Length: 123
Image (cartoon, rainbow, N blue to C red):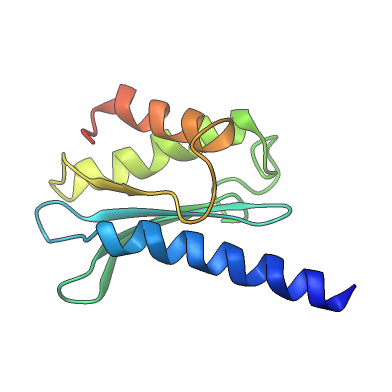
C-alpha cells in the first residue's frame, strides 16, 4: 500500500517538473504558479530571474475569510483569478506565463485562467 502511494507521489513530481522545465518567468512576463490543495487554492506571480514573488492570492487570505469564496471550488477560483489579475495590473504586468504544475488544465484551473483573461491578462 505504501509503495503505491510513493509511486504516485513520484509521478506527480515528474509531471510538475516536466511542466516547469518549459515555463520560465521574467520581470516583463512573470510565471503565474497555481497550487491546489485539498481545501484551498493558491496563486503567485513569480519572477524566476530574480527569485521574487511579485503578487500572491489564496482562498484562505483575509480578503476571502468569512465569504463563500474561502473554499476550493469553481466560483472561488474565478474570484481568485480576478484578484490576481487586478494585483498584476496594479504592478504594470499585462502578460504572464501560466504554470499549472502537475494538475490538468480543466475545472478549477480553467475557470481561474479564464477569469484572469477577462480582466485583461494575456497568456
